[in-house]
Amino acid sequence: MANYISITESEKKQMLDAVGVSEIEELFGGIPEKVTLKAPLAIPHGLPEQKVFAKMSAMAAKNKVYRSIFRGGGAYRHYIPAVVDSICSKEEFVTAYTPYQPEISQGVLQAIFEYQSMICRLTDMDVSNASVYDGATAAAEAVAMCKTPRKNKALLSSALNPQIIETVKTYCFGSDTPYEILPHTDGKTNVDFSDSDASCIIISQPNFYGVIEDVEKICENAHGKGIKVIVCCNPISLALLKTPGECGADIAVGDAQPLGIPLSFGGPYLGFMACKTELTRKLPGRIVGQTTDTRGNRAFVLTLQAREQHIRREKASSNICSNQALCALRAGVYLSAMGSRGLERAASHCAAKAHYMAAELCKIKGVSLAYKNEFFNEFLTICPKPEAALSALDDAGILGGLVVDGKVLWCVTEQNSIDEIDEAVGIVREVCGK
Image 1 (cartoon, rainbow, N blue to C red):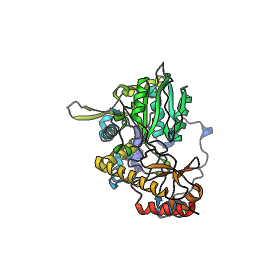
Image 2: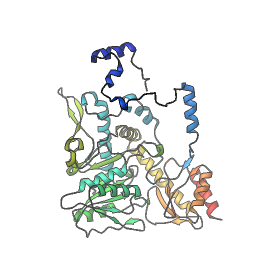
Image 3: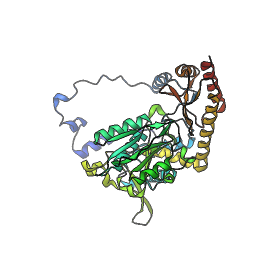
Image 4: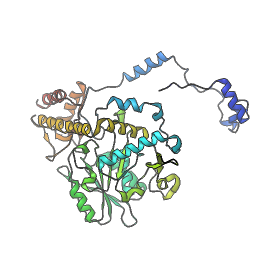
């Protein structure tokens, strides 16, 4: 990025003269005397660049950086091409203010438009937005899209990520929306559509336990009862599995973090949302559309803002007025760099290596798959000494799986080599084989 250059004293004087004051303090003359500062704030003096660098380096050294990661549960370590950081660090994109003025925001608007187009292609949906904080928020917003005056109950799979369930429940509480948690058997959601009051059902593909759900069957049965289907999906998995659109879903949501966004201690991330044409006007947040200018040239603008809270106020179906353009840009650049073939190869590596690790772990006495259903890159295992095994992995600089109800949820991506997998399995064998 370019260095910031402050204004000169002469430029400052010209600005003050233009507004008719002689000192900057006069600009704040309307502030009551009793609330003004009588002494400078207790803020340390500035440091030379070298000392600031040393201080920040010392702070960063306190972080524990794992050389190998086998944990997912909603946030995943994937390969990020160097071009993603190169493009997304350009100062033209870093200031991601909402592009309300299209005449000076064509670059950012086009970037968002391309991202939306890629999400539509990835999910096989008709329209996408670019404004939601994360996957859990996207799922909650999707529930609001499905409500009608006659049907407003939401059905939630218990095999959803717990964070998604809690976020949806919070949204439901705020909008007086009833909900029901559906149980699961052997890792798959038990679906009962006898309740005609339901407006929608939310399921994950793959679900939190890594199991691949029968989304097509669920969509068919749900639509027979007039219930819309919301599918929370891992975007990388869509390179191999049937897309939400192919399965007949009405709305596809998820977290785009795997698409070129680093783990970054939990954020910022990006919730993607895409839906069928008939739900377009209910889709919250920013939607960029393509048009032509007065000269007939291709141009981009924000569209359908009438849905927004800042225009419709209390009548709005959503309060999302955010702008996740920088994260959306990363996802767009990542997808462009990887291409359909690259994304498919990454997904294939995830699935193949996950199945290899599962098979190797299950050779250890006392370790077995908790569920026998097919999975993508996450799987749940019964482990005789889960905490001890994960502690031993941690001592070796390896972040092991996530403990879920006394079992271990493992995750493998294309970043995990066979040697890393064998090392991790060897440590688990040493601990659990005793």
